[in-house]
Image (cartoon, rainbow, N blue to C red; front, side, top):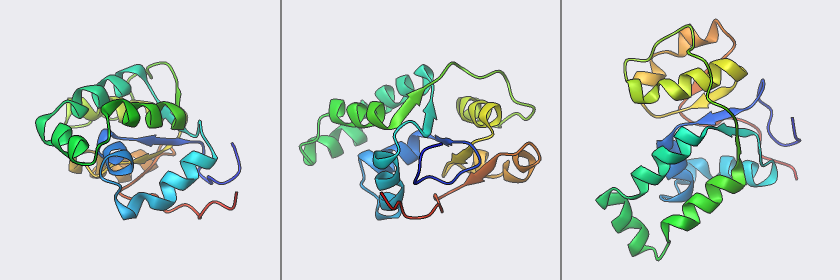
Length: 148
């Protein structure tokens, strides 16, 4: 693991967190954004996760936001590519998410014993079960501020 991010293994971020980081510039994600820029590759993602981001960036409400801020969707994808390490799809985890679209995040976090960041209630309600297999699920990253 690279200096700056202190997780048990790595991070898995759902699409809403990626949007908060790169589209909405949510202040709650500022420390996470800085940490990811200083320690690229700690955020694990799959091709399916990137494809989901591509699809979501085309949603009218997201596309309007990008246009209003003169930010092309490609700039968001470039940031995603810089900050992530693409890994193969993970096998099905021991636990099943109520929302099938979120299962890929659960599976990847379980396979890598990663911290999973999500704002999705279907994911957050799995936190206690996932702790049993070494996965932390949180709404906001609570790691230390990177030191550089």
